[in-house]
Image (cartoon, rainbow, N blue to C red):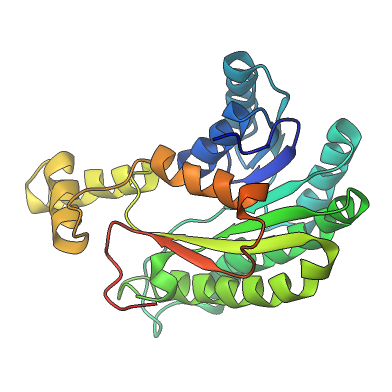
Length: 264
């Protein structure tokens, strides 16, 4: 299926690793130019070069800590100077947390609010004017199954991802008249470097291997019995950003191998 993404220009935050990198490569495979935003400048630039080599598209690797407004502004200026604007924004930057409500400090709450919610708000304000000039576009937010089905050990992550869902719904209503469609994807278990790092630490404590630890997590939680590869998740982003999904507005899609225990 031709998704009609050839020549589109896409900005992906958290784009140098995990889901973000898989999404960047999927768009490039469709012929889109991509701008990867990540804190690690060298890794972002290296992955951008690899994308250019593999898919013969334009790719930017931009150093950007999305919790800092001035770095978002600088990244937007870089994108405008190089691409002339943007068609698609993927707000994907984020990571898990571990704390209790009673012990977490205000600073920790503010950090994750900046990372998961305010970054998406600020990038939207910075890049939507480019989409309006081009007559439309698409925004996709990466939320989480935890926004609906919280994990006990990361209340801040659960809460900030739930806030991202509501922001996306409000934004979708505000921008639909500009021909800008906003949707959200809520992944379940995805085998990212974060999970691999966690497995390495916790498996040692439990006297098992990282592979066995991850297999146990998958079998305990996901009826499908395994983690998703980031590449499996990336297909949904490309479809929702394309004109093939032209009637999809303000929706949230779980891609979780059956982990969600309630009906939506």
